[in-house]
Length: 167
Image 1 (cartoon, rainbow, N blue to C red):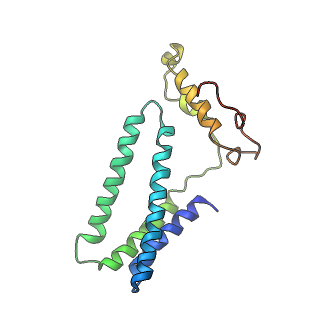
Image 2 (image 1 turned 180 degrees about the vertical axis):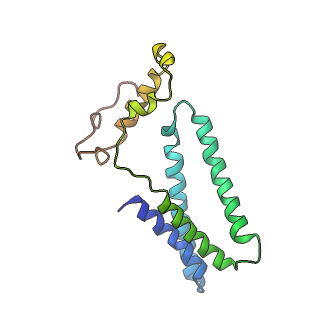
Image 3 (image 1 turned 120 degrees about the horizontal axis):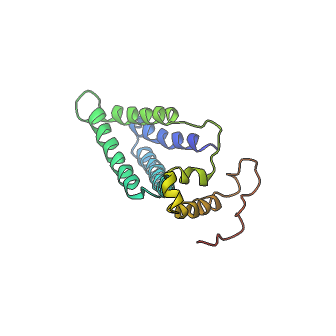
């Protein structure tokens, strides 16, 4: 199953929560939605170290602040006035999240080598000084953690069954 489909599956429980009139079904929908949200949070913060090794603190801060900003914006849009009933606000919030999830799909079919991605953060002068070598080691570790499914041709990654020397 595509992770994108799974994300919208969890958002559908929020839509159900806004439409349900039965307390047991509403509790079940809230629990399932909460499970999906927690999984998404772990997934998002799990990839933060791999976005930019050089700017890890900035990326972590922006990720946390972005979540808070998004929740405040959602509160403002759907729950700050009497324009929407709470149940309608929950359903619209779920539908909006589904739409943005679909719009955020950016798969162009290209794969990137980790070494190129992490080395791009450094200038040529910094590379000549050897300052980028830690990032290259980090890229090697990133590649080894990808797993068998992530290899473009379906074969195993070069370091799949080995521990990298720099771990």
